[in-house]
Image (cartoon, rainbow over all chains, first blue to last red; front, side, top):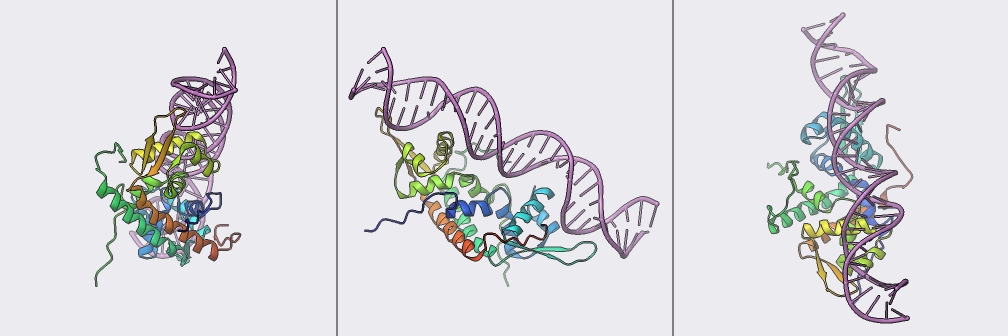
Length: 120
Length: 120
DNA sequence: AACAGTACTAACCTTTTTGTAAGTATGGAA
DNA sequence: TTCCATACTTACAAAAAGGTTAGTACTGTT
């Protein structure tokens, strides 16, 4: 029986790479919204409760920088800019799907009141 | 035609739940190591470069708290304690697998030194 | 001339996360 | 009696992440 290939946990291991790209409080939520359709800045803001304009634009810039999201400027006045998931960005979708599955498993198996986590 | 079921992005949406459980710099790396076999504190420390003892024990506690990891105290002297992934913790493994796939796709498609950020 | 709509930008601040360095407890071996 | 191994614990500091508030630029509309 062969032993599984153990990937070394280093600065450039796949887990760390992925965490760098989509870690943080907002990036996945932005990606998730853009997965449905291209969206304008203001539309994104409405769809993601509590995100500040600063965080939204900041995280969009990071996502654009890493080429997961594309920015389309329509050059109109008043400004019209759309954001959409790039082809590479779409590779995050199976990951998001697994996160959803995991959360479902977890919340169905764990008593929701056993945790003292006042998130709101 | 039916529209896709859009999960609302709220304080209790699956993405946020998952991020709370396994977000941060170290949790997934710990889980990944424990996926192979139960490990002692000192073994984990050796396998995860640069993690401090403080972060290791702190994150282990959080993972135990959320029941993704189990702690087994052998009650010996010098102390012997083993950590292993719980059954629920194993539900993170497909997620980790997807992260690995994503990182591979990403690094194979993106030139590491290019940036097309229109802001720069 | 003031205002509306959109997509930002900037200064400043608070909170959260992570890191460093040292110390504790235990019982047996030297 | 001192030291060793192991698994922590504590106080403090630094860094990163996130939040608040106000303001800019551009034109067309009132």
